[in-house]
Length: 493
Image (cartoon, rainbow, N blue to C red):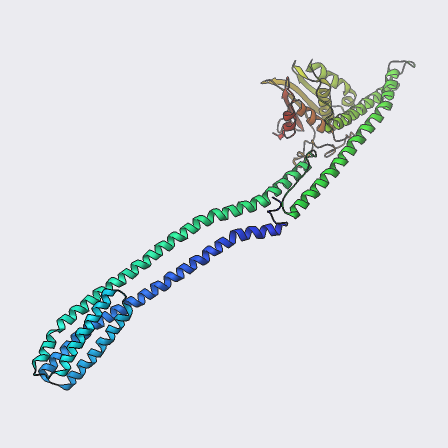
């Protein structure tokens, strides 16, 4: 392949143009040459036919005039009539000479020779005899034979003209068939050249387009190897270099997240343990204000723990180092636990909850389901106005769990919908809200729902704010294919 294609894209383009244009140009030139030949042959045949027709007409006319002059000379004995006879005889000779040059058939030349012989015999008798002699009468009696020969020559001339026209028509038909055959051969050749050009350019360009799409989607596992002209191959090498750089940056980022998250977990565990000891009265009973402060510390410790868990889960999932640890559990107690963990935040934001959870038993990863619920609820709290409402419901339909979480906030702007599930994308901050996030909560939701063989949808029209719907099997059967396909299943219903 490398030895066949030119080394550069411009060379490949020139080769493709040459493969397409040269055969077509040669066909056009050949067609023009054949048309010119046919035109010349037709013109020559027309000129010859017109000349032969005129000469035949002159032949017949001059014989009649010559006979008339001979008869008048016989009656009137006027020398001027004999001179007129000689003039008609000369024009008759000229007509015979023209026909001899234009006609080609042996029969026509034989008739012309007979006519010249008969003409000479009649001339000898007329010019050598006196008007009163009987020889001139005998010569005049032979003019009908001369006219008969003239009529035969005319017929032979017309037949020869017809034969020439038929020959030209035959050549025209053969030329047409030849041109059609050349066209029929050149069309596949041109198509083959175009396909070869498209293959030589289109295939590496499709590889480059696929590589760019994979880089844009964060799929850095597949190496980029583009074959083709040198400039396209060089572009592929640049993309491969970019892929390796992005892979290095991704590994550095995940390594940083893992290290920082682990480093934060130890002091956080100490803070939470100390807060729990304070709330349990291990160092003495706390008054109301002290307990409120300790509760705020405990709530923020839980919030920080959730953020660290998101970072760890996201980093681990990006490296495909974790899987699903499925177990059978009821959904209601899990939702209740998540709501209790978020209770202080709900109270501080004065957000009202409307919860409708059916009694559903799932077979899934309980820890990841808790993070899914926790992140969706945290996102709803962050974007809900004070005194607003959050709606949460869960039901089953056709063996699928339908989990809805919605708020009364500003909703999701159309230009942000394509990015809200991207890692570290924080979106537009909620008005009047001091709650900030890492931007990976919804990314973790999408990753974990996809891992269960489900999908996340954005629903419009049912609630004034953002409305997320999770659809996943009650007992998922995880497979790599399902996980890979689920990453694309983010819909705006």
